Image (cartoon, rainbow, N blue to C red; front, side):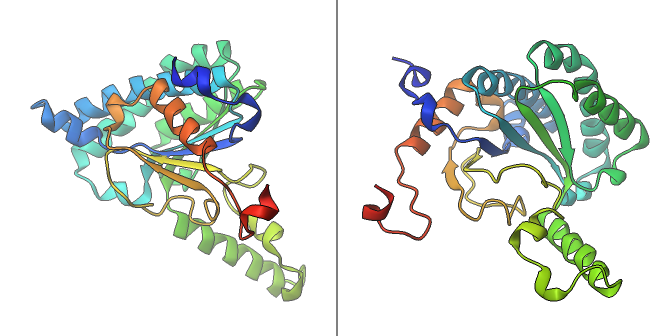
Length: 246
């Protein structure tokens, strides 16, 4: 029996976040340049997105390029940006066919102009879709996101639009990049690393964490289903005790 057949469709996480790690190591293990791993990682993205959509997942957020990734060698950064543009252009038709709505979070103004334009066009074109919301975290830093939310609220207080006591968790969340999205219930990280890497720090406060040794280019929809099945076996107490939850 496949992992998919074992999943309880009534207990799906609404939002799954993924740290797609291991492209470079995967390529190095095959004696190839790191960008070869990024190209093959696109195949994993395609399969996981389709698998999540088939299952009925509402939100899938992929850590695509962190703010810290700008510090990588210029050749690799440029190659990733070019790959992003070509992938977006190739995948729009499939996103439309599968009713997937594309979204992006992060400091998008840091992206090259052409990349930003193609991304914006794809987001606008798929905005009519009503299925899975696929969010790409690009030039993303969770610390920067939280700091910017604090700055925005501080400015409103300074301008007399708010009183400090008016600020609550809901208002703070409304000033994050992910405003309007439910917080992830499941965070998956590939490659055997056990770090959060400055990703959705506020949003994953109560997420279940799932780590796998598989490198991202080897991760497919069955691996996603295995992670969801593991998630469904856990007891989520949110500070309560088992008797209260059950």
